[in-house]
Length: 275
Image (cartoon, rainbow, N blue to C red; front, side, top):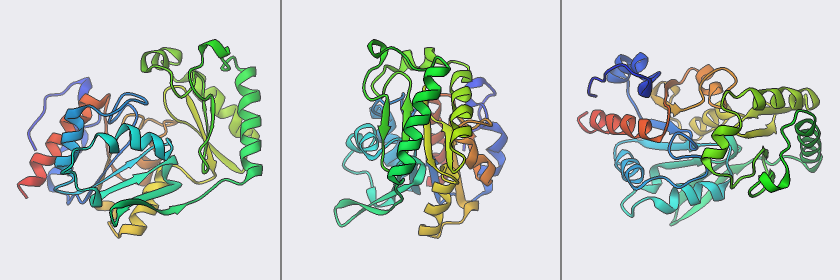
């Protein structure tokens, strides 16, 4: 792995540099939005090629609050034909669902659904609290679904699922609005888990279900030890939706955008290809 100069673009990378040189890396897990691609947009061709290269040397997992169609649109449809899909693990809704490519098609290994009562309570709370806190935008400013039932997760997107990445970044640049909404909804739903998801979203799942749950479930299924896993994400600070993975004790690299992630993947490939 080549040495890198300090700088904001590799925040969180240098602190794990020496550890990565000596550890066995069998699985690299990634967040999706703002890590592999801009929010709700497809991965770039260079990212698709890099992921295909990485899949030749280790398993790859992608875990996000998004539903299956988002993974398919943003990643799977863009991968080149040579990508080894048998080594790719897809974990929608923070790991409440786990999908593998077997016998020429994508199959569910497991999926945990919210009950109808849990969904109704989540929708009622996020609607009420968003309006109280000024986080319920006029319909004219919302593009796509504002509240999405993902089966195992309810997601509130203040500007809608189809809002542009630029508008999403401008809506809550410090995260204060999402965190205030998350706290208010969490107080209403003590039996559920509420997290600040993407740049404008709140994710509501069953308590104890977050990216740490999803990653632990994946490792239980595959038998890969935690010590052989690296996680790459952009929201690894306390309160961020990647932070549970940090608390789990996974070796974690914090990135700033997909270009930063591309550099990290290329470094992984250089290191693993020579081992």
